[in-house]
Structure formats: C-alpha cells, structure tokens
Length: 469
Ligand code: PHE
Image (tube, rainbow, N blue to C red; front, side):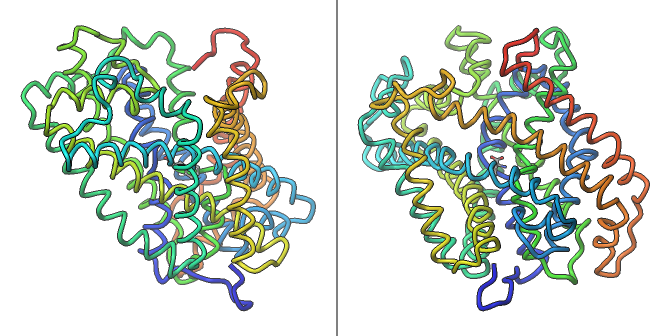
C-alpha cells in the first residue's frame, strides 16, 4: 500500500508465506475439498489434485507472486505497468474479488452464527439447534431465510475484516495471521487425530484414500473438478497473490515461498478429508442414509456435519465449537485477503488514502452482500439469471477465474515472456533450476488446461452436454 509514499512490506519471508497460506487456506480446504474427494472416487481425486497442484498450481502461484513483487502494484495496475495496453487483464482480475468478497462475507456470517450456537450449547448445555439439526437441516434453512439475522452476522464479519485491514499490512494482516494460523493448524491436526482414533474410523479413511473406480465414470470431469478446486483453494486468478506479492521484500525467494504456500494449502486440504470423511461415513452407516449423506455436497458443512456432531451427545457441542472456530479463522483470513486485494487496487489506481479505500470497499461489501444475505429470505424474489443472489455470485466466479487464468498465462508466457518472470525469481541471488519446466508449463500446458475448464464452465452455464461437474 502506498502509505506515506512508500509501499508497505511484510516483515519477512515467513510473514509473507503465512499471509498467503492464510488466504489460500479457507472454506475451500475445509469444506469443498472433502466433499469433492468423496464425490469423485476418493484416491483418484486426491491423486489428480496433487498432480495438478505441483504442475499448474505451482506455475501460476510463482507467476502471480513474481508479477506482484516486480511491479509493487496490485492486480489492477500491475499488468499495465509491465506492458501498456494490458491493463484490461487487471480490470477483469479485479472484478473477481469485487464480486466474491461480499458473498464470501455472508458465508462468513453463517459460520459466525454456527460458532455462536455451538458456544451456547457447549457452555450452557442448552441446544439452540434442538431436534431440528438432527432431523432436517431446518436450523440452517431457518437461519438463511430469517428476516435480519444473515445480514446482521455478515455485517459483523465485514466490520471485523475492515478492522484488521485498516491497521495496515504489518500491523493488521500480518499480526492477525500470526495468531490465527498456528491455532488453525493445531485445531485441524487435533481434530483429525481425534477422528482417526474413533472406533470404526478405518472404514472412512479407506473410503477417502482408496481409489473407487466405480464411482468415477468420467476422468475428464475429475480433472476439471480438481482444477477448479485448485484455483479456488490456492486463491489463484483473482489478483490476490499479486497484491500480497507486491508487499514481498526483494531479498526473499519467490520460488521457495510459492512451494511453501502450495504445500501448506494442500496439506490442510488433505487433512480436512481425514477430519470430515470418516465421521460422515460412520454416520451414514449408522443412520442407514448411505451414500446420500456422503454426497451431500455443499450442504455438508452446515447441514450434515451438525447432524453428525449431534450423535456425539454432550461432547458433540465441544467438537462443533472447535470445528467452527477453525472454520471461522480459515474464512476470516481468506476474506481479509480478498478485501485487501480490493482495497489495494483502489489505493494504487486512484491514489486514495488507505482508510478511504477500506471504507469504500466495506460499504460495497455491505450493499452487495445484502443481496446474498437477504437472497433466501425477504429478497428471495431477486434472482439474477434465475439464481439466488449468492449462487449467482458464486457461479460468476467459476466463469471469471478461468478467463483470468488464461489471460495470465498468455501474458506471462507470450507477452512478458518466461525469462522476465524467472529473472524476478532470481533476484534474491538464488539459482532457478526449473527454467524449461516453467516455460513449457506457462506457454503451452497451462493455457490448454485452463481453456478446458473455461469450455466446461461455459457448457455448464448454458447447460450443454453432460459436462455438469
Ligand atoms: N482460497 C480460499 C479457500 O480455500 C478461498 C478464497 C477465494 C480466498 C478467493 C481468497 C480469494 O477457501
């Protein structure tokens, strides 16, 4: 950020890696990865995901961080700084955080509400969820369609985010991550170990890890599903890593940072599967609900898991409390990064003060977020393209991110050229031993893979063929 004319910076390599990992580790790891793995044949999905992460994921992470550090600009102005006429890439890239931050904060509000419910249950023994959670998800539906509550909780979430960001890169974002990230890791490992020790967990772990070819009829779908998940989970193609990279010090190593961020994010994603899948499988077997419980998809976190926690009796409230604290930290640090990408873009483009920019972004999140917050309740009639507002914003991201990713590959591979990115990677004096790999990936393989997701997303949006993933 251009505070007093000088761009802020992280205090060191660790602070940067922690911040970028905090952005990457979010709802995508804790909730989306396990349910996709369950749907797409367990070990098959995991293997495909890992293969994509070490090739495409690493390549794009490196590219974004290098562009950010080279230009010391956020995504909106970074491209035009490097090559006149390419500012449009920055504009499209900025659209993504602008569109998704408001609705992500609404989901953050849901998490906050669940956390409060579990805190009440754990501390008082009372059950605000009552029988409803165990039966039908009425607790969840009751909340998201309530007249005011979803908005109120989202507002608290947005204000908390703004409170951290207004303090600046070092004093706000960096310090909050130093507190939240180690706690998040500790809770995730603790919960996974607890689950693994439960009697009967072996069955679920097998379900998660052993490839199930019978439930995977089309490997193309698995690859596309894994690739979409990877972009989301690594916070790629949204300008976030460019913005965070722009605060990186020149003496720190870009490739080392990229490897660590990607590794940390993937570790937590795989760990989440160990935490969630065995309990859901055990519950499915016990309740006789079978695969339907496991395939619950997006409803897994807010509907299925509370049912599972209810099975544990009084301990369940504490497990729920630990779980939703973990989810809240993950969602909060991710929301901070998206908000920062918007705030920084505004500062770099209009040269406004940081506080003005934070207030503007905050007002935007509240205004646009209200569409999603009220979208299942009082404003359920407002349906852009026939979808509830929140689903609309979510889908817009699915189409925009592959477009941005394709543009980044073309820009880095063919306009700027790999050697300029690699030169930035060598700036701290370290040797770069993956020149050919990087050049082939960014020029040929990455654009082709990204194009495949784009085509599938367009087909899905227009409902063409059997490409629904
Ligand atoms: N990467 C985050 C996750 O896994 C989500 C995210 C998306 C964060 C976009 C920032 C920007 O949940």
